[in-house]
Length: 152
Image 1: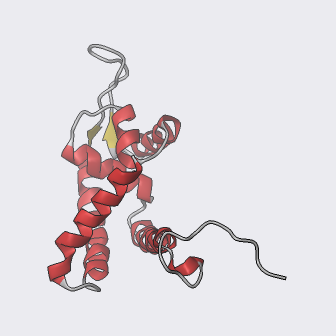
Image 2: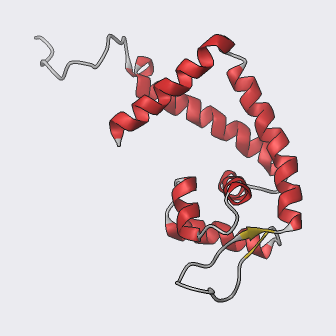
């Protein structure tokens, strides 16, 4: 008996663990685990931290923009925002000045929590990129951007 001919792999690989997608997922899972552990010490989840980062860079953005920027659904973003608001880390008006979007802003407590958490997250990124030669970082980032663009 012989194995049935199947699809040809995109590149030579002994098994699934040598595929690019598998390696990207494994790296993303390791990053998420490290961030989960570090952010827990600051009373934040990864989605909450991501929201605080986006709000710091873009004060007043809508919850829909936050959802897009943090790669979650609007419903998930709404839950995250509600938790941040209940914790006093973000504020948004009860009604919008114009249109339907309610602008979201960091509070002083949110800014302080973000600063403390950012230090921990940046330490993780430093550890991660220290594993590759610094001369290759720009090329890696460009390659990741090109792979993303190829799938969009």
